[in-house]
Amino acid sequence: MNYEIREMLPDDEKRVLEIFQQGIDSGIATFDTELPSSEAWNSSFFNECRWVLENENNFVIGWCALKPVSKRACFRGVAEVSIYFDQNYLGKGLGTILLKKLIIDSENHGFWTLQSNIFPENEASIKFHQKNGFRTLGTRKKVGILNNEWKDLVMLEKRSETVGV
Image (cartoon, rainbow, N blue to C red; front, top):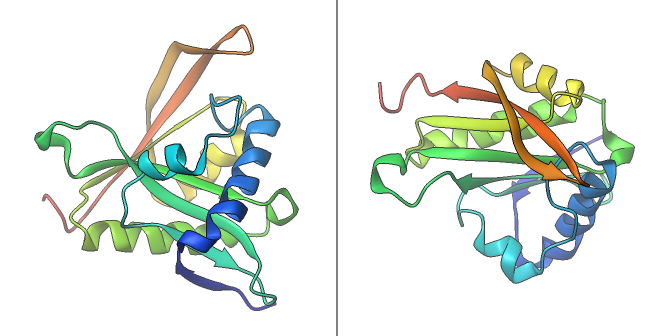
């Protein structure tokens, strides 16, 4: 099969949100319980460093983007990674292709630290990030509530070897 990475376009929003809904439905990918509007989703991410992965039929099967961790100028080079795949394409090694593109692009845009916060039960995502150069910083206990249950988050980060060194 042939896959293509390309920049995310406004026309991709519907499909990106469909894939995000699958993450919401999984119960282990996000604290979100309702799909945000296109406007709310769009405003929560940086405009740069947005990518999609398409299959041979030009159908978006995965996406990644970066969120700011803070509005403070001192943290302008730190971003949180969001990466989601259609459930029919999980476990096929395609995430690595997309994440590597995001890492390169993030460095080209001056980001020196990428971080991810993942539910401990999402072991596949934790292993995926570790395999791609993220190191585990620790577990933040009872960070938020999802479906009336306190949830922990495993915090991982990847420091650039070229930006901010």
